[in-house]
Image (cartoon, rainbow over all chains, first blue to last red; front, side, top):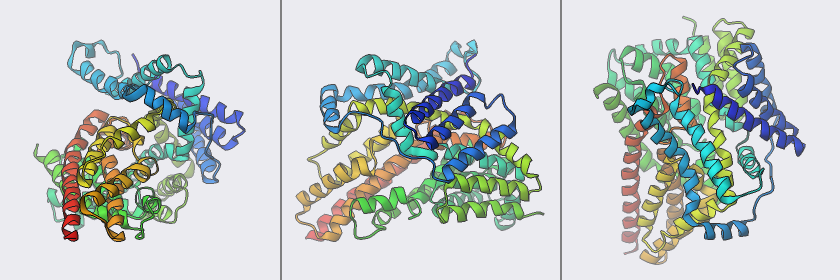
Length: 314
Length: 223
């Protein structure tokens, strides 16, 4: 049976390769950070929780002191790329399409044909495992088709990975924060408080508070990912799912999108709202946000209605 | 009841507002929350390590980077640029609605780095939108030009945000999965990502209508 452990081995090997390539360039911080992440992927299931915890602290320390730098591996020039893209045409999109197609078609086949009874994949893990298979297939196809130097995919991947930097593990870290919040009973505390504020038993008003809370917390923190574990622990899971029996998939997915509406409204999300205003040389620093208000507010209302209808009425 | 674990939420909010490294903020908040809830420090570090380890699948998505990087080496960005340039000739309204659809669809298929402000909006979408607006409505004052460019940037953001979650192997979907799984509610990525579709449709309708209304308003202002 193919399990997540196979995926972890694959990802661990990729991070280890990136660590080695960083080491070759004497980027010690990058090498240490990706090396520790590789260890987490390759050995995380076999070492104690304390070792895993110390691994996390070490990675955060490297990122915290600014140990990660952007890299500049050898690649093609803009002129070469222009020429190649003219020659190769829209076929360039095909390898990228292989990945979602493999995963979605594979998941449907696996779930709606007798294939599912083969027990080939770990239960409920088939989509992400098929995503991994799709990546391997797409990479192999692109290698055969384009015939780049053997190390090219690794170097190009490192170029992108180093431009993301420590932010690559932020979502995973935030999910871990959510788990610690759950352990510390943050959800029960806020659920108790919110229960006193929200008029008893009104599902609709609780949905409104949850979605507005996601948007507001996102505006304050500039990041829906950071707001999500907080609001899920506070209202989404204890009240909407547990007390009122709502559908957790809708509450989670659309709750996150309510947060995205908040991202459109805040200068704290500098990458999306302030940086482009500067790039486009707008006189008004908040010019982009101004154009987004008229979409974000009605869309937030839509999200509230979708959560209410999808989680409680359907 | 002991309310002190809530301080962790305060640490997240203040830490992000003061622009400390977010990883540092998150780990500090996690440690503080656990200790304030009465656990000893080693137990909190263990809990954090276990939770990080249990959620590794969220970071598995980065294995796609070699594929995207390799295609970029052979001109993927340039190809996307040619597709966007092919939308030329229309009015500003039609151009931005087409870009909105393109951005939502490519993000939903996992190609979210095909657009973006430095790569696409500044060099392409904003100048094309401005040129199309001038062509239809005649010369425009500085403020109106800024509004057009800002609308181009807004369209890129909205297309990305309300397209990307339809792709299941994306950090936000897997983060939702991780948080719910930690709380005892196992979900699959596809179960979550199909629920991004209704909002994506609403976003297209609302923002598309606003773009077209904006184009008409520019025309009226000139008369």
